[in-house]
Length: 179
Image 1 (tube, rainbow, N blue to C red):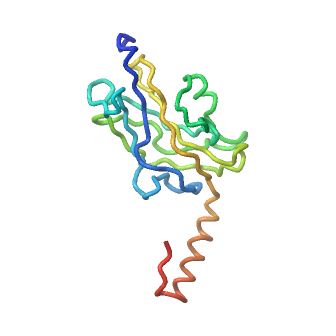
Image 2: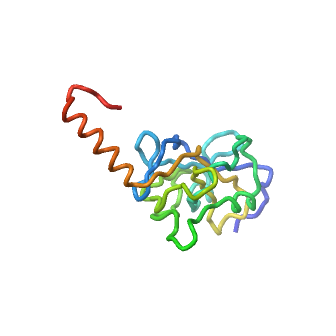
Image 3: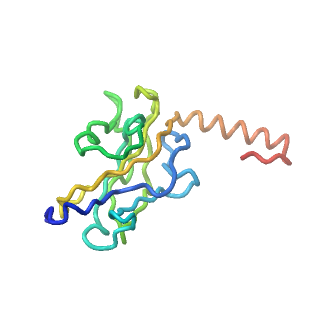
């Protein structure tokens, strides 16, 4: 187990690409540009860590209350972060499903198959954030968790209506471009 011998060296996990657009339940979670969400571990110089064991550490993706760190200061304790994890509604299945644990490679990893199983209407802010935290037994050093921007998770039935609406319009107006 790695000790706290470098406790002055501050490391943090961070989502690299943007994730603020609305998501839909049971659809794959992606970045705003529809690519996999990228996670990296950074050192105090804001460079991606490439030394072991940090560059190949295991991380865990969680859902966080949407109003967590609204002041954008980016400093919290591990206990405070864990207290803001959202697991789902009582009596319902877990809020997140898929491959929520993965290893970084060269200090970088990708969220490829996670999905929300419910919408975000049950949390007070009606919004969620994704969080990434260290989950590697080889490392005892505190590593700052990373979070995305907040976003709403809508019911997948709304996604189907959205697609049907725009596909029907393009049938009647094929020359129009919908972004």
